[in-house]
Length: 185
Image (cartoon, rainbow, N blue to C red; front, side, top):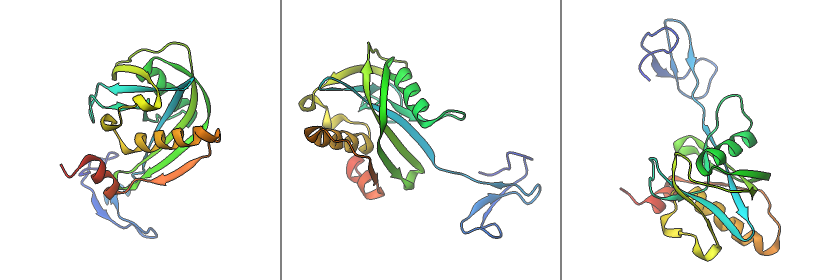
């Protein structure tokens, strides 16, 4: 950030009085520009023994498979965001059961919230998906998944499905996890 979005004057990056971390500050109008993590909300849609995945039509990771998920919008709940993203990416309606994975990515300022859900009805590729398909566990394109958060969620699901118990899984993706997943490129 170079300029204040309130008055247009240059900003500086410093720790405001009474705070504990640097923020962008405007000395002209006094605005402190707080930047907070973005929430990615989505679903793990299940139909019988199969999971619905979307092949991304957009960057990042175009052509790779993911669960339907995306950034939460203002004025919606996390459940509403997850359902909306599922409609947008998979043209699908779901019955949401509850939060299943909460994955922190502090190095890129994101929090993933994936809800377990039952697919209700048909599905099709939305504008952000090249294709959408149902996969049995052995059919999952593990080497072509878009993000480590999706891989982790799917591993939890297939493990939990054995016992029929689906607890909330909370974890972190570290920069090292990300590098192992994407490589150093």
